[in-house]
Length: 224
Image (cartoon, rainbow, N blue to C red):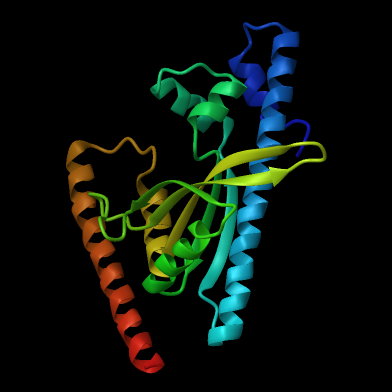
């Protein structure tokens, strides 16, 4: 973990605080981020093992890619503010479940639920929350399986239970979500344009879903 993680953002936001307070907060936050980073490595390793095992048993890999990310300080601060919570390391630890994020892109819809089940079935993984936006898409057409889990990380003299958010999507779901985010995120669009693009993007999401279903059906025929 870099020593200057979030340094400029923190110093700018806490400018009214003393240099000592800023330094203490930075040290606490970097320690916290190191825990989240370790949790991401643990979960990523679990998916890589599952992918290898599935490859040996079925001669194909269900996972196309795995990406990890730590939430930015700006996003952390804004989320705590929306919740009316203080900006402290303890508040982040107690109240945010998605500081550590793992995105798993799968080949087929069935792979998503299979991998999700395999993850939460492991005896050192605790399921905190699950949201199935595949069975119940968001209003804008977004589809993905979101799972909040808690995993142990082992330090030299301690063990910590760390929460992380896992998102599982197909290639098509991921492509749609990335493009939708790029076109609309934090854009000051008019109400009329929001409505028009909403309908168009919703149609694209449905086309993407139909392609996933067709590819799944073809794979099922081949494997039978």
